[in-house]
Length: 321
Image (cartoon, rainbow, N blue to C red; front, side, top):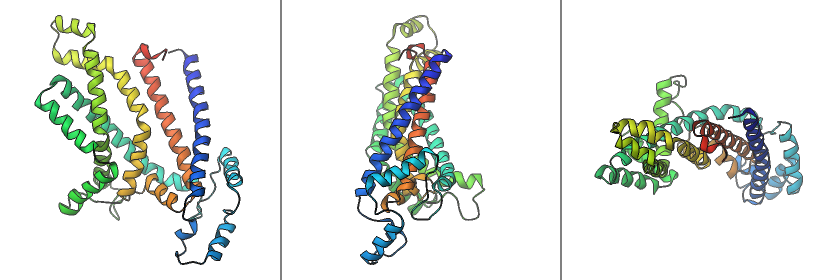
């Protein structure tokens, strides 16, 4: 790819990200502003008087009009200041700094496992097309897909943490074992399974379709006619031809995967961004929620940009897309 095209692509994506960040943050702020509940209930019993509640909200400048509140936050955010949490009083940037690493570890590991497993299962489905194995993989993956990530997480906790007690049901590590890598991985097992299984069916189906489309091309038929081994044809020709569209699909699906990560974190009480944002939404802690929205959009745009650049390098057909 030419350097000018890369710079132009990056500039377009950054411009789109900037617009999307403020549009999404404003929409999110409007919904939080009109939602029921109050940040007061996070620290004060719900039996508190209306007068005390109004006094606390006045001290936090929550009594001001919607546009004025959003304007104050937006101007600070443009300078890199995401204000303070209305619940804890800590700087939002410091809170995110602490929680982000946990979410990145969980999300990255689950996404890598999902990619490799989807590719492997889809290849099996194509090689043994319409066989018992193909139908079994489709049936099992669709069965997990029928359950929302929330329900699947609860089911895994019930079976493997409550009944069999094989895996822990919450936290990032056992107390006193925070620096133990194996203990951390042990706690990651169920959340990763929940994330992978809830997305597996869609990705396997798409990869299977992409591989079959590649198989039907004339140069693949020529490779079979030349007597090349089945393994070489599938891994060298078919997979290479379909890899660009597979990567593009994974990048486009990263939004739903990231939202799934937040939900799974909240179910497993995993101390990441997801657990934080659910609590913040419930108590209308808008500086934290909006900061997470900004972070999520930046991550999604970054992942899609990297995927798009890789696709254009792998397959020239994407260069003019």
